[in-house]
Length: 102
View 1 (cartoon, rainbow, N blue to C red):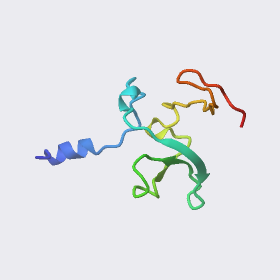
View 2 (view 1 turned 90 degrees about the vertical axis):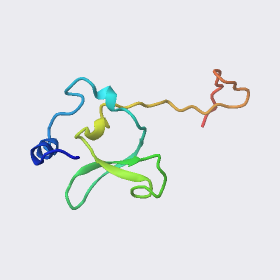
View 3 (view 1 turned 120 degrees about the vertical axis):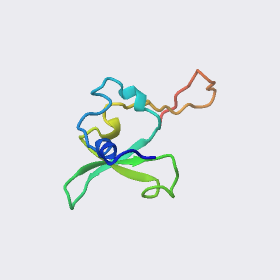
View 4 (view 1 turned 180 degrees about the horizontal axis):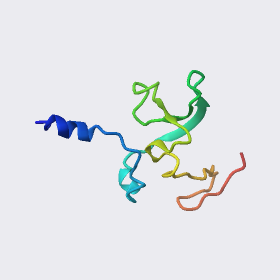
């Protein structure tokens, strides 16, 4: 049972608060994506990130989707992780990268 009409209306209200406002934004981190680009929608002038999901090409726009840029939707601008990528050459072992020049 879904509840009364009043309960459903209450659940459907839109809020301008997010998990960060409640101090629990870390609780929503349950999936990884990669920001692969950005753009501006010519029809609406909306800035967006091009985001690659891990579900494969049959999902979204060949595996990608757009997220509004500058609005921190889904915490995409505040809950980020990045890595410095290095190419390790011959003689490298786990934990000891002999970096090669690219």
